[in-house]
Image (cartoon, rainbow, N blue to C red):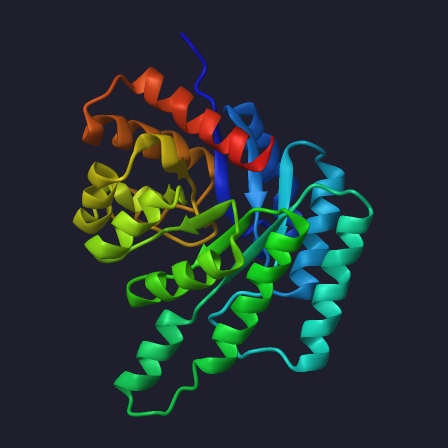
Length: 266
């Protein structure tokens, strides 16, 4: 029987218990996961992922950034993070910019509670990350859903960022069409097994602009209820994408793998 192969294009590797990471990765690699893209939350997270990439060369591809669903870092903290990323670039290391984006869940939660929320600093730091990605010629990994997707697109277009990856995207028809026409990639999580919104997105989006991810250790529902999230779950995602698009599963898996290899130069 042919061995399934895939890449987990978005995982918070540093959010797993330190004692569990090596076994998690070794088991994943044993079960056909070629590599994982390890996204970061902030500078310390970025440093952890850099060390993991050094421990698993060619198998852990790191992304450095600042997750938007947390308070905006101070000017000094931003400068420190950006200087550190530039130093990695200067060393000739392989990496992406991410996870960065806009705070949809924090903003809408605050608004629902009648609390003020200033989005401007988040737009500013995303603009700065987009400029850095364009300058360094690096892929950028975005957390930007629903109406935030259009805002992120405007910023990416303004800086002419060439490689844009919207992870676990949800949004309106106009933004989806815009993303497709701009050549932006999306990645699909295991919730494609049970979320109609994600299944519709898979129907609409070209397979050639798609990847698969777990966003681990984020837990899933449906058939994954109560299970720890591991990279091997992307094998299921590939199968669901093939079924939704009514394409041969083997061809679909190969295309998704090729997309990710090419996008991240893996």
